[in-house]
Length: 337
Image (tube, rainbow, N blue to C red):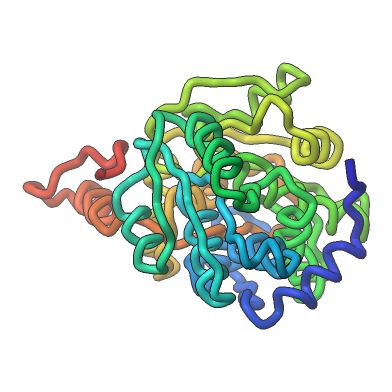
Protein backbone atom coordinates (compact mmCIF):
# COMPACT_ATOMS: atom_id res chain seq x y z
CA UNK A 1 0.00 0.00 0.00
CA UNK A 2 1.49 3.31 -1.12
CA UNK A 3 1.61 6.30 1.20
CA UNK A 4 0.10 9.39 -0.43
CA UNK A 5 1.90 12.63 0.35
CA UNK A 6 1.70 16.33 -0.42
CA UNK A 7 4.51 15.75 -2.93
CA UNK A 8 2.18 13.44 -4.89
CA UNK A 9 -0.42 16.20 -5.04
CA UNK A 10 2.10 18.74 -6.31
CA UNK A 11 3.30 16.26 -8.94
CA UNK A 12 -0.31 15.70 -9.98
CA UNK A 13 -0.85 19.43 -10.40
CA UNK A 14 2.03 19.67 -12.86
CA UNK A 15 0.90 16.54 -14.70
CA UNK A 16 -2.72 17.57 -15.24
CA UNK A 17 -2.18 21.29 -15.93
CA UNK A 18 -2.82 20.93 -19.67
CA UNK A 19 -6.18 19.15 -19.15
CA UNK A 20 -7.81 20.25 -15.89
CA UNK A 21 -8.67 23.89 -15.26
CA UNK A 22 -7.71 25.88 -12.21
CA UNK A 23 -11.22 26.87 -11.12
CA UNK A 24 -12.27 30.15 -9.45
CA UNK A 25 -12.88 30.57 -5.74
CA UNK A 26 -15.81 32.97 -5.45
CA UNK A 27 -17.01 34.87 -2.41
CA UNK A 28 -20.70 34.16 -1.80
CA UNK A 29 -22.06 37.37 -0.34
CA UNK A 30 -25.51 35.89 0.16
CA UNK A 31 -24.25 32.81 2.05
CA UNK A 32 -21.81 34.94 4.03
CA UNK A 33 -24.62 37.26 5.09
CA UNK A 34 -26.88 34.32 5.88
CA UNK A 35 -24.32 32.51 8.07
CA UNK A 36 -22.39 35.47 9.48
CA UNK A 37 -19.16 33.92 8.17
CA UNK A 38 -16.94 34.29 5.13
CA UNK A 39 -18.19 31.67 2.65
CA UNK A 40 -16.29 31.04 -0.57
CA UNK A 41 -17.42 28.65 -3.32
CA UNK A 42 -14.87 26.52 -5.18
CA UNK A 43 -16.38 26.30 -8.66
CA UNK A 44 -15.48 22.80 -9.87
CA UNK A 45 -18.80 22.92 -11.75
CA UNK A 46 -16.87 25.00 -14.31
CA UNK A 47 -14.48 22.17 -15.25
CA UNK A 48 -14.59 21.15 -18.93
CA UNK A 49 -16.41 17.89 -18.13
CA UNK A 50 -18.66 19.64 -15.61
CA UNK A 51 -17.01 17.93 -12.64
CA UNK A 52 -13.86 17.77 -10.49
CA UNK A 53 -13.42 14.17 -11.60
CA UNK A 54 -11.31 15.24 -14.60
CA UNK A 55 -8.43 15.98 -12.20
CA UNK A 56 -8.05 12.43 -10.91
CA UNK A 57 -8.80 10.87 -14.28
CA UNK A 58 -6.13 12.99 -15.99
CA UNK A 59 -3.56 12.13 -13.32
CA UNK A 60 -4.26 8.41 -13.66
CA UNK A 61 -4.35 8.22 -17.48
CA UNK A 62 -1.30 10.42 -17.95
CA UNK A 63 0.62 8.05 -15.65
CA UNK A 64 -0.05 4.96 -17.80
CA UNK A 65 2.79 3.12 -19.51
CA UNK A 66 2.92 3.06 -23.34
CA UNK A 67 1.70 -0.56 -23.31
CA UNK A 68 -1.25 0.27 -21.05
CA UNK A 69 -2.21 3.18 -23.28
CA UNK A 70 -2.11 0.89 -26.32
CA UNK A 71 -4.45 -1.68 -24.69
CA UNK A 72 -6.95 0.86 -23.40
CA UNK A 73 -8.69 1.50 -20.10
CA UNK A 74 -11.86 0.51 -18.27
CA UNK A 75 -13.66 2.00 -15.31
CA UNK A 76 -16.91 1.91 -13.36
CA UNK A 77 -18.87 4.99 -12.42
CA UNK A 78 -22.11 6.63 -11.35
CA UNK A 79 -21.50 9.14 -14.12
CA UNK A 80 -18.98 11.93 -13.55
CA UNK A 81 -15.87 9.73 -13.25
CA UNK A 82 -16.85 7.84 -16.39
CA UNK A 83 -17.35 11.10 -18.25
CA UNK A 84 -13.95 12.35 -17.08
CA UNK A 85 -12.19 9.14 -18.13
CA UNK A 86 -13.92 9.28 -21.51
CA UNK A 87 -12.86 12.90 -22.00
CA UNK A 88 -9.21 12.35 -21.07
CA UNK A 89 -9.03 9.09 -23.04
CA UNK A 90 -10.32 10.84 -26.15
CA UNK A 91 -7.75 13.61 -25.77
CA UNK A 92 -4.99 10.97 -25.55
CA UNK A 93 -6.41 8.76 -28.30
CA UNK A 94 -7.10 5.81 -25.99
CA UNK A 95 -9.90 3.24 -25.98
CA UNK A 96 -12.18 3.67 -22.95
CA UNK A 97 -14.84 1.27 -21.65
CA UNK A 98 -17.20 2.59 -18.97
CA UNK A 99 -19.30 0.22 -16.83
CA UNK A 100 -22.43 1.67 -15.27
CA UNK A 101 -25.33 0.22 -13.35
CA UNK A 102 -28.85 0.34 -14.73
CA UNK A 103 -29.64 3.01 -12.12
CA UNK A 104 -27.48 5.67 -13.79
CA UNK A 105 -29.64 8.36 -15.47
CA UNK A 106 -29.77 8.35 -19.27
CA UNK A 107 -28.33 11.86 -19.64
CA UNK A 108 -25.10 10.68 -18.02
CA UNK A 109 -24.82 7.74 -20.44
CA UNK A 110 -25.42 10.00 -23.42
CA UNK A 111 -22.65 12.37 -22.32
CA UNK A 112 -20.11 9.53 -22.17
CA UNK A 113 -21.10 8.12 -25.53
CA UNK A 114 -20.70 11.55 -27.12
CA UNK A 115 -17.10 11.51 -25.91
CA UNK A 116 -16.45 8.24 -27.74
CA UNK A 117 -16.51 5.84 -24.80
CA UNK A 118 -17.90 2.31 -25.00
CA UNK A 119 -20.67 2.28 -22.40
CA UNK A 120 -21.73 -1.00 -20.76
CA UNK A 121 -24.65 -1.22 -18.33
CA UNK A 122 -24.83 -4.03 -15.81
CA UNK A 123 -26.55 -4.61 -12.47
CA UNK A 124 -28.50 -2.43 -10.08
CA UNK A 125 -25.64 -0.86 -8.13
CA UNK A 126 -22.18 0.58 -8.62
CA UNK A 127 -20.74 -2.49 -6.87
CA UNK A 128 -22.33 -4.79 -9.44
CA UNK A 129 -21.09 -2.59 -12.28
CA UNK A 130 -17.60 -2.78 -10.75
CA UNK A 131 -17.70 -6.59 -10.61
CA UNK A 132 -18.61 -6.66 -14.29
CA UNK A 133 -15.82 -4.21 -15.09
CA UNK A 134 -13.34 -6.54 -13.42
CA UNK A 135 -14.52 -9.38 -15.67
CA UNK A 136 -14.14 -7.28 -18.81
CA UNK A 137 -10.75 -6.08 -17.65
CA UNK A 138 -9.47 -9.65 -17.45
CA UNK A 139 -11.08 -10.71 -20.72
CA UNK A 140 -9.80 -7.77 -22.77
CA UNK A 141 -6.51 -6.87 -21.10
CA UNK A 142 -7.63 -3.36 -20.19
CA UNK A 143 -6.21 -1.22 -17.38
CA UNK A 144 -8.63 -0.41 -14.55
CA UNK A 145 -8.96 3.28 -13.68
CA UNK A 146 -10.39 3.29 -10.17
CA UNK A 147 -13.11 5.80 -9.37
CA UNK A 148 -11.74 6.89 -6.00
CA UNK A 149 -9.70 4.31 -4.07
CA UNK A 150 -6.39 4.90 -5.80
CA UNK A 151 -3.34 7.07 -4.97
CA UNK A 152 -3.27 8.76 -8.39
CA UNK A 153 -6.99 9.60 -8.23
CA UNK A 154 -6.70 10.94 -4.69
CA UNK A 155 -3.65 13.04 -5.54
CA UNK A 156 -5.40 14.46 -8.60
CA UNK A 157 -8.44 15.51 -6.57
CA UNK A 158 -6.11 16.90 -3.90
CA UNK A 159 -5.00 19.62 -6.33
CA UNK A 160 -8.25 21.37 -5.40
CA UNK A 161 -6.87 21.72 -1.89
CA UNK A 162 -3.71 23.39 -3.20
CA UNK A 163 -5.76 25.91 -5.14
CA UNK A 164 -7.94 26.74 -2.13
CA UNK A 165 -4.85 27.30 0.03
CA UNK A 166 -3.31 29.58 -2.60
CA UNK A 167 -6.45 31.66 -3.15
CA UNK A 168 -7.77 31.67 0.43
CA UNK A 169 -4.87 31.21 2.90
CA UNK A 170 -7.09 32.25 5.84
CA UNK A 171 -9.32 29.21 5.26
CA UNK A 172 -10.16 27.36 8.47
CA UNK A 173 -12.87 24.99 7.16
CA UNK A 174 -13.43 23.16 3.89
CA UNK A 175 -16.84 21.62 3.14
CA UNK A 176 -16.65 18.76 0.64
CA UNK A 177 -19.25 16.42 -0.93
CA UNK A 178 -18.61 12.88 0.31
CA UNK A 179 -19.13 9.63 -1.57
CA UNK A 180 -16.33 7.11 -2.13
CA UNK A 181 -13.92 9.56 -0.55
CA UNK A 182 -11.42 10.31 -3.30
CA UNK A 183 -12.27 14.01 -3.37
CA UNK A 184 -12.34 14.62 0.36
CA UNK A 185 -9.29 12.41 1.02
CA UNK A 186 -7.16 14.40 -1.42
CA UNK A 187 -8.37 17.78 -0.18
CA UNK A 188 -8.02 16.76 3.48
CA UNK A 189 -4.48 15.52 2.89
CA UNK A 190 -3.49 18.86 1.35
CA UNK A 191 -5.21 20.88 4.07
CA UNK A 192 -4.05 18.92 7.10
CA UNK A 193 -0.48 18.79 5.83
CA UNK A 194 -0.48 22.58 5.49
CA UNK A 195 -2.25 23.16 8.82
CA UNK A 196 -3.68 20.36 11.02
CA UNK A 197 -6.11 22.88 12.55
CA UNK A 198 -8.07 23.33 9.29
CA UNK A 199 -11.37 21.51 9.65
CA UNK A 200 -12.55 19.24 6.85
CA UNK A 201 -16.29 18.52 6.80
CA UNK A 202 -17.86 15.92 4.53
CA UNK A 203 -21.48 16.21 3.43
CA UNK A 204 -23.56 13.39 2.02
CA UNK A 205 -27.23 12.59 1.44
CA UNK A 206 -29.32 10.77 4.03
CA UNK A 207 -30.21 8.22 1.34
CA UNK A 208 -27.55 5.47 1.27
CA UNK A 209 -24.44 7.34 2.51
CA UNK A 210 -21.93 4.49 2.26
CA UNK A 211 -18.88 6.23 3.72
CA UNK A 212 -20.87 7.64 6.63
CA UNK A 213 -22.12 4.19 7.63
CA UNK A 214 -18.66 2.72 7.15
CA UNK A 215 -17.12 5.32 9.45
CA UNK A 216 -19.84 4.63 12.02
CA UNK A 217 -19.08 0.91 11.83
CA UNK A 218 -15.30 1.50 11.88
CA UNK A 219 -14.96 -0.65 8.75
CA UNK A 220 -16.18 -0.60 5.13
CA UNK A 221 -19.76 -1.87 4.90
CA UNK A 222 -22.21 -2.57 2.10
CA UNK A 223 -25.51 -0.67 1.93
CA UNK A 224 -28.47 -0.81 -0.40
CA UNK A 225 -28.30 1.77 -3.18
CA UNK A 226 -31.37 3.99 -3.53
CA UNK A 227 -32.44 6.89 -5.74
CA UNK A 228 -31.24 10.36 -4.79
CA UNK A 229 -31.01 13.81 -6.29
CA UNK A 230 -27.33 13.49 -5.40
CA UNK A 231 -26.99 10.48 -7.72
CA UNK A 232 -23.25 11.12 -8.25
CA UNK A 233 -22.71 10.35 -4.55
CA UNK A 234 -24.32 6.91 -4.76
CA UNK A 235 -22.39 3.65 -4.62
CA UNK A 236 -20.38 1.69 -2.09
CA UNK A 237 -16.79 2.32 -1.00
CA UNK A 238 -15.68 -1.29 -1.52
CA UNK A 239 -15.20 -3.83 1.24
CA UNK A 240 -11.52 -4.04 0.23
CA UNK A 241 -11.05 -0.27 0.42
CA UNK A 242 -7.36 0.50 0.99
CA UNK A 243 -6.96 4.27 0.81
CA UNK A 244 -10.02 6.49 1.08
CA UNK A 245 -11.62 4.87 4.12
CA UNK A 246 -8.53 5.14 6.35
CA UNK A 247 -7.84 8.68 5.10
CA UNK A 248 -11.42 9.81 5.79
CA UNK A 249 -11.30 8.08 9.16
CA UNK A 250 -8.06 9.86 10.06
CA UNK A 251 -8.42 13.31 8.47
CA UNK A 252 -12.12 14.23 8.19
CA UNK A 253 -13.44 16.08 11.24
CA UNK A 254 -17.18 15.69 10.72
CA UNK A 255 -19.76 14.20 8.35
CA UNK A 256 -23.12 15.92 7.91
CA UNK A 257 -26.14 14.35 6.20
CA UNK A 258 -28.77 16.29 4.27
CA UNK A 259 -32.26 15.30 3.13
CA UNK A 260 -33.57 15.15 -0.43
CA UNK A 261 -35.65 18.30 0.14
CA UNK A 262 -32.58 20.10 1.47
CA UNK A 263 -30.58 19.04 -1.61
CA UNK A 264 -33.35 20.38 -3.85
CA UNK A 265 -33.23 23.63 -1.87
CA UNK A 266 -29.45 23.76 -2.39
CA UNK A 267 -29.78 23.31 -6.15
CA UNK A 268 -32.43 26.01 -6.35
CA UNK A 269 -30.56 28.39 -4.05
CA UNK A 270 -27.41 28.16 -6.19
CA UNK A 271 -29.47 28.75 -9.32
CA UNK A 272 -31.62 31.61 -8.06
CA UNK A 273 -29.21 33.40 -5.71
CA UNK A 274 -25.84 32.70 -7.34
CA UNK A 275 -26.86 32.02 -10.97
CA UNK A 276 -24.94 28.75 -10.80
CA UNK A 277 -26.14 25.46 -12.29
CA UNK A 278 -25.02 22.61 -10.05
CA UNK A 279 -26.03 18.98 -9.67
CA UNK A 280 -27.40 17.39 -6.53
CA UNK A 281 -24.04 16.03 -5.40
CA UNK A 282 -22.53 19.52 -5.66
CA UNK A 283 -25.43 21.09 -3.79
CA UNK A 284 -25.00 19.17 -0.53
CA UNK A 285 -22.63 21.75 0.97
CA UNK A 286 -24.97 24.62 0.13
CA UNK A 287 -27.87 22.52 1.44
CA UNK A 288 -26.04 22.11 4.74
CA UNK A 289 -25.50 25.85 5.11
CA UNK A 290 -28.99 27.04 4.18
CA UNK A 291 -30.52 24.19 6.18
CA UNK A 292 -29.05 25.59 9.40
CA UNK A 293 -26.48 22.82 9.82
CA UNK A 294 -23.55 25.22 9.85
CA UNK A 295 -22.31 24.66 13.41
CA UNK A 296 -19.50 22.52 12.03
CA UNK A 297 -17.89 25.34 10.06
CA UNK A 298 -15.47 28.10 11.04
CA UNK A 299 -15.17 31.81 10.29
CA UNK A 300 -13.47 31.34 6.92
CA UNK A 301 -15.05 28.49 4.96
CA UNK A 302 -14.60 27.14 1.45
CA UNK A 303 -17.40 25.02 -0.01
CA UNK A 304 -16.58 22.74 -2.94
CA UNK A 305 -19.23 22.74 -5.69
CA UNK A 306 -18.22 19.47 -7.28
CA UNK A 307 -20.14 19.46 -10.57
CA UNK A 308 -22.77 20.90 -12.90
CA UNK A 309 -24.08 17.74 -14.59
CA UNK A 310 -27.72 18.01 -13.60
CA UNK A 311 -30.57 16.80 -15.78
CA UNK A 312 -32.33 19.95 -16.99
CA UNK A 313 -35.67 18.20 -16.45
CA UNK A 314 -34.83 17.83 -12.75
CA UNK A 315 -33.77 21.46 -12.50
CA UNK A 316 -37.00 22.53 -14.22
CA UNK A 317 -39.15 20.48 -11.83
CA UNK A 318 -37.35 21.88 -8.78
CA UNK A 319 -37.76 25.46 -10.05
CA UNK A 320 -41.41 24.88 -10.94
CA UNK A 321 -42.15 23.56 -7.48
CA UNK A 322 -40.37 26.47 -5.79
CA UNK A 323 -42.15 29.03 -7.97
CA UNK A 324 -45.53 27.30 -7.54
CA UNK A 325 -45.92 26.55 -11.25
CA UNK A 326 -48.29 23.66 -11.95
CA UNK A 327 -48.26 21.24 -14.85
CA UNK A 328 -44.53 20.47 -14.91
CA UNK A 329 -44.58 17.92 -12.11
CA UNK A 330 -43.04 17.88 -8.67
CA UNK A 331 -41.40 14.45 -8.55
CA UNK A 332 -37.87 15.80 -8.47
CA UNK A 333 -36.53 13.07 -6.19
CA UNK A 334 -36.18 10.37 -8.80
CA UNK A 335 -33.73 11.12 -11.65
CA UNK A 336 -35.24 10.74 -15.07
CA UNK A 337 -33.96 7.68 -16.99
